[in-house]
Amino acid sequence: MGANVPRLSLRGWLVFTVALPALGSLLVWGFFSLWHSFSLATQLEIRERGSERTLLTVPIEPGEKFVLSYMHSLDGTEVREEYRVESSGFTFLSYTGSRAAIEYRGYTGPKSRVEFQQGVAEIPLNPEPTGRQTLYIRDKSYALWQLKNAAPIRIRVRSGLLR
Image 1 (cartoon, rainbow, N blue to C red):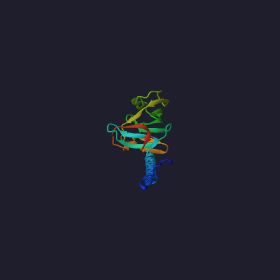
Image 2 (cartoon, rainbow, N blue to C red; image 1 turned 60 degrees about the horizontal axis):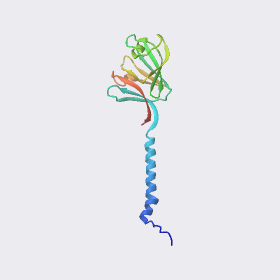
Image 3 (tube, helix red, strand yellow; image 1 turned 90 degrees about the vertical axis):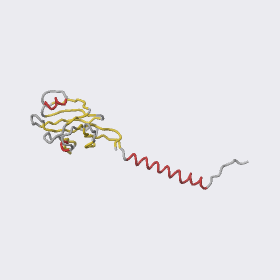
Image 4 (cartoon, rainbow, N blue to C red; image 1 turned 180 degrees about the vertical axis):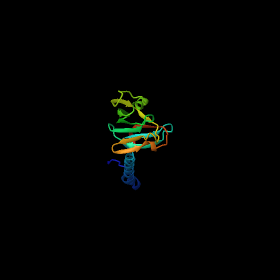
């Protein structure tokens, strides 16, 4: 006696040979389309404090350095702060200019040009036309004082799966 093998109907045959592979292909295509719209990346985010609205994002790599430059409001000298991007914040590396600006931020170090490493989670800033706060990354500059007229902002690092 032969084994009792069930026979596939035309409908069953179509489901197994056409519909399931097509559905599988569609799912794979959808997954990769969605995956490519996101990527693992690091960026600087400039956000408005309070509303947390993002004003600017700049792609950057961990370990990369940038400079924040501005005019000190009391003595009118240029201050240049150098930072290195870390995965969850910044390392404040050095500054030139007004010691009062650095003390205002709560950073510590010697009295003139200082080079030291201090971890910073975010950089608070009150951009205004007289301060001319400018961010320099690679060979580009971003005039932060033009982003939002005198509204407090913060600069932070965002890493991970970003859109």
